[in-house]
Amino acid sequence: MEDLYFLDKFRAEPNMTLLLNTWFTGVDKAPASEVLGESCGLQDGEGGALVCTAYATNQITQETFVITCKCIIDTTGDGRVMAEAQADWTQGREASSTYGESMAPPEADTLTEGTSLAFHAVNMGRPMPFKLPPTFTRRFQKSDFDHRYLSRLDYGYWWVELSFPWDTVSDGETIRKHLSEALLGVWDYMKNSGEFADKGIDNYALNWFGWYPCKREARRLVGMHV
Image (cartoon, rainbow, N blue to C red):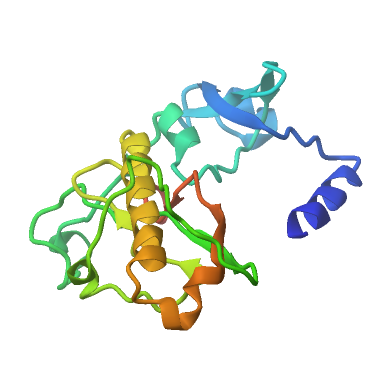
């Protein structure tokens, strides 16, 4: 419903062009004086290069859009725009000496917070067996959850999560594959281990689980603020 609310607002705004199902793919840059115009007061060669053109492709119609601009706000999450623009960015944990952080590692590394996959389930009011999970489903036993809390039947779980040794961007598909195997394994255990029978798990069925994992951390722009 929230998506419909925002879609209504966007479509009613005459000064905005909304390109749905459209993925950003690249940029062109030009001297800052050209992008910002004469009023900026920059001379040729001052201010470096700024993004002047963005490219995007509609995944349904296969149209390519060439967007000229003076300002881009990168909300891709992975910092795709700044990476394409070859801006300075960092990824992972800084050394403790970088910002004087006592709990940071002595040496910088590329470790990031993990990527998670979640599910929703609903009580259908009647038995809903889960007898034939996909063959790639991971199999778990009780000891696998010694430090993981299976506290809810209708939603779970942030700890279906992976990071090391994979890169959250370039290894994203590998991470998604392993998370899917683990998530279905968690649900298989909840449904078929017998541990949750007294909580009514027999009547619960999956009605959604993510195909696109929830990513906590990727690239970070190095600018006035990090």
